[in-house]
Amino acid sequence: MFSPALRNRQRVLAQLSGQEKAEPAAPAELTPTTLVGQEYAALRVLLHDNLRTLSDIASHEARVPVKVEMARAFAPWIEGVLAAQGTAAQDEILVVNLVWAIDYRDFDYALRLAGHAIRHGLTMPQGFTRTPACYLTEEVATIANAEFDAVTLDHLLAVQALIDGHDMHDAVRAKLLKAIGRRYARRAEEFDPAADNAPAGGKAAYIQTALEALQRALQLDKNVGVKKDIERLDREAKKLAPGGDETPPQE
Image (cartoon, rainbow, N blue to C red; front, side, top):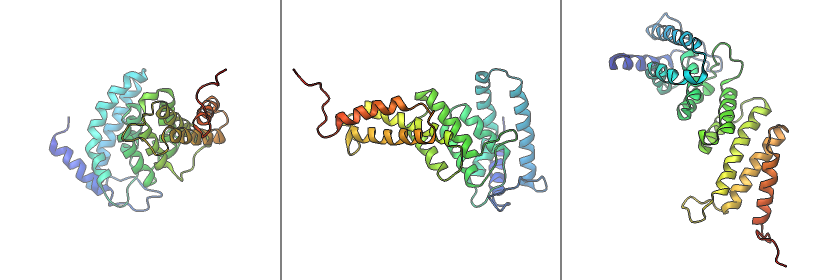
């Protein structure tokens, strides 16, 4: 466990790391020729030691709590990096912790790290072929579609805003839209007109927003698996439309 003084030192040096590099579109990694670079190099040694430890654990599930503990050692450095203004250096510590944060389901933290990585043009660690924007989108959307309660609509909308304008495969973006659409559909199912946060347009507004997301997902990937969702929501929308009737006609 690092002492408070050492954690503060890491945080301050990390802030300085954001002031030593230019050209965020193609950032270079810090070199051990400065005090900041030496601190980064020391933490990278620890990081690679941690990665070797994780590689010895076969169970993905068993790795998760280990990653949570390992991440604590890098938190002061990362907080300093995030607090720095201006440009940023390529940072293996930060992008590896982005991967870990998604694995242990801390999506608030993952979004902060991804925002920095995307904004400054950082690349993912060696062995990863996707960009930070694509990695974030696909990993979070995959979890969201497999485990409904694991990812909130707010998290998904934050991902959508963060990756706006960034290139990725259509199928990846479709997965995100599928997850978003299904959560709006759930809100329609649970709609309470007396709630303080009830949207203008009521239940129909949720259904329409869900349909727009799911239809766009289908446009991007015909195999995304939302056709049944769209058919069901279309029926619900017709019932709520003027002249629609939720009850069958009486004989």
